[in-house]
Image (cartoon, rainbow, N blue to C red):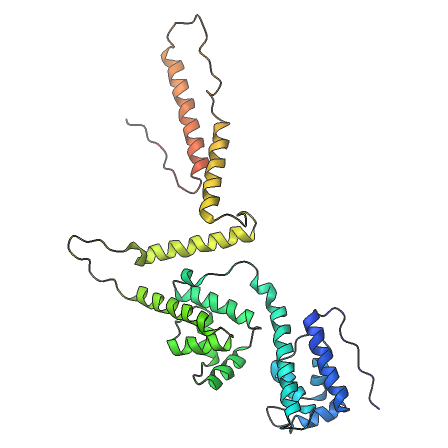
Length: 318
């Protein structure tokens, strides 16, 4: 008799514990040891072979095992080719995906880009990375196998470049990746529109017609400003500076009003009243002192309202 199995890790996430418990159930129903299950995965020199310790760790619940290990475990727990084995494989794959999504959930914090906000290869790669996390964070090898089975293979190196935002995918590559990330056909149409929009922006703009106007939205400088603004909004939302029920424009207006209220507190003449009975005009020194004080106030006010705008020192004419 083999050693008793260690209990499922109590600190594991709920869906990971469910996967480990199901794998142990398969082993108990097969009435086999891990050594027997390992022998059923195939010869030791084949890619599908899994050792007894590997199968034991998969059912331990200490960490999420690779999908290939889980599928090999399910195949080894029954007669090959039977309908029950196919059902076990489907159930094990479903539980593994739920556990993988649970593991990738911390990477989904914050709000991702909408498809209409995807304007460059970098933003497309960022959005596809979130889709990959929602699909359970499959490895690049799994992405390559999945796209190959779908009919258009995307190599691991190419998938890494696309998700890193270094290159744009072709329409076939994008369709294969979206299918690997479990994106519905209706949602996939929006991503294809985003790809078309990026490709159109990369084309040189046509010369303007005589007397007409060009669209500034296609200017790279404008695109960079829009992306920088979107990143700034995401950072401020994560930091809690933007309220959940307000837009970025609402936040800017609120900050502008706050700066104006703060500036009003420094106004030196707010409660000033002209003394009665004094009609003597102020001398030149007093006038210059008042003008210098007013200029200093204007400089403080401009620094509070426009903190990011560099100001050049004022040079008095000689």
